Length: 146
Image 1: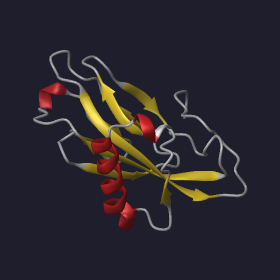
Image 2: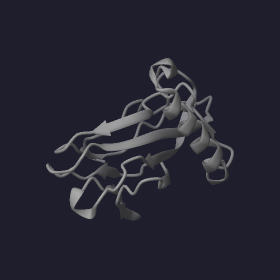
Image 3: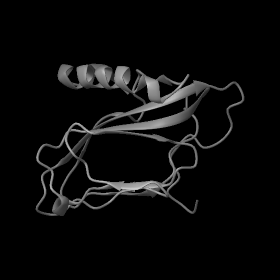
């Protein structure tokens, strides 16, 4: 949530990504405060359990509409694992330079385990939002029964 802690090259990549995905997110907008977004690094053996993302911003009156994930891991191989699984959509290998944009509301997803012989899995994440004066719902991810 603090852009000053993010390296300039990562900020430039986030800004470029935001511009490029604009046609895919309709009238939604990017949170430039990067709440829960930014550079994510997952070590060998790491994973992100199956979950549904937060529906609403915990501070602002915003409803989340999209998740955007850009893979930064060079030379990633199938055997490294770390695929992004999106229910009823796809299982996606984190290929360098590939950006995935998916609708967030109610979308169950996870990052499958990264192999013990793999390098760190690196991604840039952004979230798109819409103003919603009637904010009610989860302000944190739901890792329970969905």
